Image 1 (tube, rainbow, N blue to C red):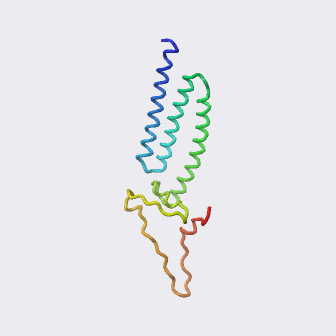
Image 2: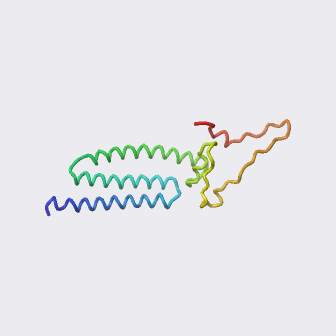
Image 3: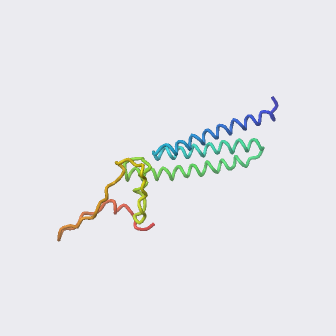
Length: 151
């Protein structure tokens, strides 16, 4: 088999692997609510795209796709570091890694987004402020101390 005849087969195989990686990442994002699994699925989608870019770059005989893959890998590494900070912050505030944990990280001035598919344990009952008796200093609210008024 000549090298020119093998090139379409290699391109087809690499594009198939890239499509499978991208599809697995998409299923992981759509089907799971765990924040770590969702970010790993996004990374899997980026790797599927990178495999496809390298395959097209090799098929056309230039290095443009491979240079773009290096840039994608650099951005993915930075994104993973920032995502890890967000996941750790959400876990520290809520004690769970459910995607609904992002609700506690919103600004105090923004309305709460309602997800009607949440289990009953994720719905927090409203807390109304209570007046203290005369001469007694009210207890400090720990959650209000963690939120900033302005960004």
